[in-house]
Amino acid sequence: MAKAPGKTPGKKPVRRIKPEQLRSKAWFDNPANADMTALYIERTMNFGLSREELQSGRPIIGIAQTGSDIAPCNRHHIELAARVRDGIREMGGVPFEFPIHPIQETCKRPTAALDRNLQYLSLVEILYGYPLDGVVLTTGCDKTTPAQIMAAATVDIPAIALPGGPMLNGSFRGERTGSGTIVWKARQMMAAGEIDYKGFVELVASSAPSAGHCNTMGTASTMNSLAEAMGMTLPGAAAIPAPYRDRYEMAYLTGKRIVEMVWENLIPSKILTREAFENTIVINSAIGGSTNAPVHVNAIAKHIGVKLDNEDWTKIGYEIPLLVNLQPAGEYLGEDYYRAGGLPAVIAELIEKGKLKPAITANGKTLEENCKGAFSIAREVIKSYDQPMKAQSGFLNLSGNLFDSAIMKTSVITPEFRKRYLENPKDPMAFEGRAIVFDGPEDYHDRIDDPALAIDEHCILFIRGVGPIGYPGAAEVVNMRPPDYLIKKGVTALACVGDGRQSGTSGSPSILNASPEAATGGGLALLKTGDKVRIDLKKRTANILISDDELAERKSAFKASGGYKYPKSQTPWQEIQRKIVDELSEGMVLKPAVKYQKIHKKFGVPRDNH
Ligand SMILES: CC[C@@](C)(O)[C@@H](O)C(=O)O
Image 1: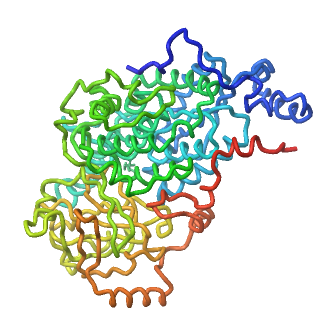
Image 2 (image 1 turned 60 degrees about the vertical axis):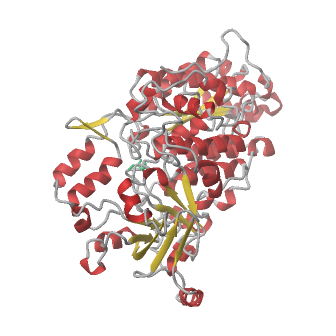
Image 3 (image 1 turned 30 degrees about the vertical axis):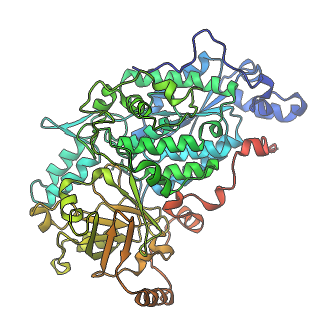
């Protein structure tokens, strides 16, 4: 059941903003600028809005609509928006729904990550350039959550996220099938000859039975949970499955609350503090969140002006145990998670152990105030802090001559993987292996089953040229399956390393987001198939085992060759972004965009348009 937005009934909200201070007044009700006001208001009235609605001091609330037929994970936001509108109207606001650049993770080629910054940029222009006093961000599919929060951070007007929620549980012949996760499993089953193409599609489609985003703890559930963790949603908003009636109630409550936030001037910079980001890292470990989280959360921090880097993810998050038994780290799915208590139950566990800091959230209360009294009603799904799924489950940030920073998700290390790579009594938590290097996914698919590579169970698979510049956009291609002859022998995962990303639904214990990427001259570009590589999880290092002289020689030969070769840009945006995008460890942000912070406060409203 959705929680109330946290205001005491009957108690008047703290009004910090007077009607005459509303941002939208500069467009719609400004007698000192009568000729322009007329132009701004006449076209807005042409679909039936009255002067009374636009000129009597009511907040104008944007609803950033991410749903469409090409964005199925967010498509039901089209219906949810009706309830958001009801809430806004009830509190005296006027809703202005508008479409934003669509992003669908599973369909956009060459990768949806290319569009995160495009959605960000275009939303900044809308939030800043139109008469909006506050905004509801309709979040869901992976990138739609960070992109919109990044934009709200840059403009810094009151904003609240409304997650769309996960799909209902998938099921096939009585077994749970989790979206994304089942794809990687089915791929292995097909490689092992257990299913054919038809069986493959049937199995995978069973994991997507309704509206909503991935029902696993993939990137979508992660980022929506983290939006809640950082305080950008109402409490309990992330986990409600998309088709549940509670989701529609949450939409209504979110619409009500944004109007109050406008009057309270509760802007993102008051919510997105260093403490909020630290809480976000802790919560990400406890839920077994996606390796895409550091990329997006670091980006949000950059746009609001809070210092945060991949070292913070290890320092703050590594020790935290895994509490949520959801695929890919565990076995359950979204509906089980919601019924067990959702994120509030996880937060309550962490608060009891003093792991979270006081930080204000969208309803004006702290996480602690919001989640007091929440508890897990299904211990098989949400574990207690003292009896977790896994003891330390955060990310390890590694560095060495291969890269300055890359992330490893430890919660998905299987006992089999641990035994094969990490339980050498003479060298615990470290392993050395022969590198097999692929340049992009096409090269990987062409050669992975080639017997000439003689890949064995101690090899380490590398993929490069798949970062923000190389791909372009940083594709989710680092979860590489072993060759089929190894899968048939029962080796289901090899250590994988790459300068791209991995799907949050993948259970592969890969080393990802390597920065700098090969395309900008990172160490991966110097690696050759057959090199010995050492990964030491205790020291958090990753190195090619060659002499300094040889490394220097390879570096100069690489420079002389003109650098790493990657495909030409195919669209204007690919070319533009390639020129200005930062590394994955830096949040893959557009470098020139970061200096534009709190722009509403800094610049006021933009100049008139005529
Ligand atoms: C295929 C599964 C996706 C679309 O959710 C993935 O991008 C993720 O990171 O979780």
